[in-house]
Image (cartoon, rainbow, N blue to C red; front, side, top):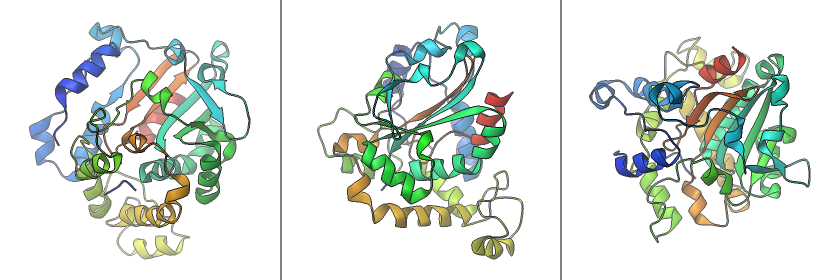
Length: 302
């Protein structure tokens, strides 16, 4: 399980150059002095690629649906592979959110799924199609949906992680090193090759005045946290959510984890399209560092 640095700049730069864009530099000194939640917010903002930025900066990155060429997904509710750019009608201006999570036994995947599940109604009202992709088999995806209450119709599989390589998502710490994926995972949990992870863990304990609460006042835990405050993410609230997810994952680790341990450290990302236009891209840079869903929804529904 993966919830519990120095970035490899040259590796990141080479990978970004290969995709036709330059890496975004974080404001190291300012971030190091900021509270954990501020570092987390800054990391997410700095990792977002917005439409037009590539052209403006002269990087030439592909900013439309042609960037999905070669990306094929296996639906949980079907038997045939589907080309990703056929999941919505770009010519009719339809909108889609493509959330490429990590493997189905990863706590980042469970946490991100929980956030998107809470926002599913808002996406439906805005006519935004939700596509949630995880690394694993159809059987693993079905077990994941049953365990966390996610809609099977929204979930797709990538058994080998090939689509993540096509899209250029971060492969994690020392991807080519001939050592166990579990050892690499432990290093990333400590923040090595996983920028943003430690501040994000701390944010789970310290709370975040700028984030929404996880529990409603009608829930038992919501009533408990209400005594601390209302209208924001209270101290230990997100840590409690992660503990709940960890308990669920640990009891199903053998069934949900990938057979190839190299996929334990493969990171994901999020893409959003209005028609054929890419309006949002976020590449996960570390464990527990995924897209800011509020910003994502604002971009795709604008």
